[in-house]
Image (cartoon, rainbow, N blue to C red; front, side, top):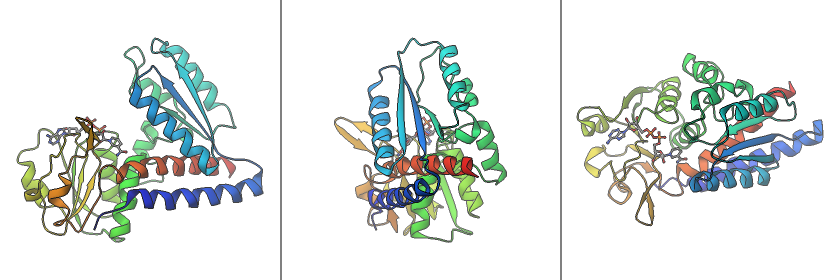
Length: 280
Ligand code: NAD
């Protein structure tokens, strides 16, 4: 089965749209997302534009604040402080990567945890790993929602994640632990990666290595989630050799059209959650 991330993301977006309409009627307020974009890195510009467009489509007020690539860290921190204190702003996102003079750690720490729609602030990371309610990073949340569509009860399943980044691998591991999976986090220093992958009932590939996972790396009927987005020539490919695996896996995400659309849908979901938390 090929998992249609576009379709699932569309379902989430229409639910969000409906909920925002209801909340607007009740409170006369709508969620608001501010995205800070620094520099002229083309992929970041495209991501931010897509995020803004998707937010508008579901009824979230969205604003992009742009800075030149030589902006000072102090100026960005001052803006974040201002946004933190603006009660009309539900969510703040600073598009990564950042130029060298702006510390990623300081920026992530500066965003108030209640407005941290990316879920990267250490307070949210800590809450997630403690098993408390938190804002969950968008891509792992999207992956989990897709996996649970295939298998609602993951208890006792063996999950293997390739990649240990703060963005993907680590929060994914926490989410699957919470679902009672037995979790292995593999990475670039893992010995015999193929052996680890062969144990997986659920395999999540988030390494950023084109076509890393081959047909002989998975057991029959594994669920395979491909997070990778890699440019090979003019083509975008994942970390999984889709053609080889598609008949062996129980379910598999394509690239593009799998995890990518879910990431944006989950950003909208997080923005709505931040807005709702402020209403209570
Ligand atoms: P990263 O570079 O921060 O982390 C990659 C991880 O993979 C590291 O932990 C590293 O140890 C591991 N790794 C690298 N090569 C490996 C190998 N040969 N074998 C085993 N492990 C290996 O990357 P990231 O930010 O986590 O992103 C990973 C991929 O996911 C990239 O292709 C990125 O473009 C993509 N991505 C997709 C989405 C989406 O919405 N679909 C969102 C974010 C990132």
